[in-house]
Image 1 (cartoon, helix red, strand yellow):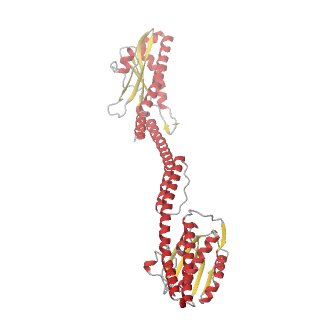
Image 2 (cartoon, one colour):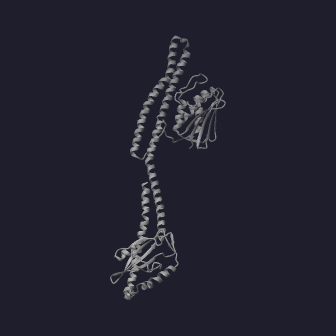
Image 3 (cartoon, helix red, strand yellow):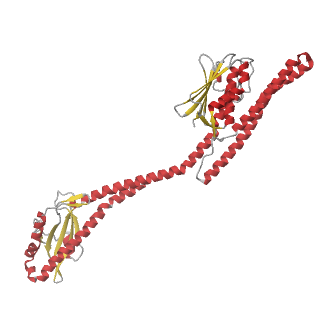
Amino acid sequence: MGFYYLIDKTEESIRPRYMETVEESLNDTAHILSAIVEERLEQNPFAYRSFPTTLHSLFAPVFENTNKRSFEAKIYSLLKTNTDIQVYITNEKGIVIFDSEVYREGLDYSKFNDVYLTLQGKYGARSSKLIDTEGEGALFVASPIRFKNQIVGVLTVIKPKTGVIPFIEEAKKKFWRISLLVASAIAILFSLLAYLSFRPILRLSKYVSSLRKKEKVVFPKIGIRELNELGKEVDLLVEEIEGKKYIESYIQTLTHEIKSPLSSILASVELLQSHPNEASRLTKNIHEEGKRIQKLIEQMLELSSLEGKKTISLEERVLLYDLVQEVILNFQSELEWKSIQVVVNSENQSWVVKGNRNYLYLTIENLIRNSFDFANENDTITIEIREETDGFLKFSVMDEGHSIPDYALTRVTEKFYSLPRPNNNRKSSGLGLSIVNQIVELHGGKFAIQNRNPRGVLVSIFFPKN
């Protein structure tokens, strides 16, 4: 608003400045013409006796010839084709004795400022209409005619404003064009400065928001030192708070999950003392529950390690097809025991995923283990690797086992959430798919799970293609 006010006031000053320039030029012209008259009177003192005749002989042919002249003068963007300067001369009484337009001769102009002030030895000028119906009027600038140190007449040069207005309007248009360009440049500059100033704050705000949502994000690059330090302090504070909460949750969950197998072990020990004849069955149960606790602790340690990472090195180039074959080979004895076949379909065996090989191995192992646990004897587990149109590699594991209840589909990646196995109704640690989801996030991928028709489960992982 202030800028518009400044521009508007500046635009208003254009017209007065132009008129002042024109008036200054008219003043020079009036004095030059007066000097010509004075030179003629000095050369021929008798010319003053017939002053009107002298003036007509001096100027009439000049103006007549000038009005007949044809020319084209391109002054900047405007074309001028005729002269519009007018001149009239009065005697010492203010009566017009020469007029370039003739119609003023004999009129009394002694009361007009240009004549009146000049006859008093002052600067005479005025702005008046040439005719009553005229809109803009004209500038009148006078100069005294001296003879023998006396003012014997007044020469007035007239410039109609209609000849000046086009230049003023053109100047205003040009001024507004430049002003708009300058205003646009200033607006763009301030917008850029505002963007550069607020971008670090927006980055920090987005980072804090991501932390609140418990997303894995890396602390952004912030150019402002104070904001950078503030962000790091917030980061440390969140880590401390989350660390305390995580430890509390970790201990509570681990205690809860160990309680069941530990109770089973204690019960088996008590029964072993009172029923020694069932030692084989009871020791087997103790062994299985002990392995369950061991597996639970190992997976908890693995998961806590993954959850503590915001990023991992993704520099290894891992051939996905070869890694799948390696995992299947290590499962071979279990697959044969249950008569389960694994089929791998891949359009290209050379597709590479950049990431951590050990974590990718663990991901594939957990997915195959999950399908194996829910599969029936003589089922087929199908693994498919194919390229998506959005630049991702889709890694899918499909089985023919039991489908997941609809209410559980959205919870399978939660820690310790597990469904009973169909062969023995026992639950796993409930950490396998949670570990898989964490690894996929660290690799910049996406995890998806859905039921197949008529039965079975499809798990898909989308890795960024390299």
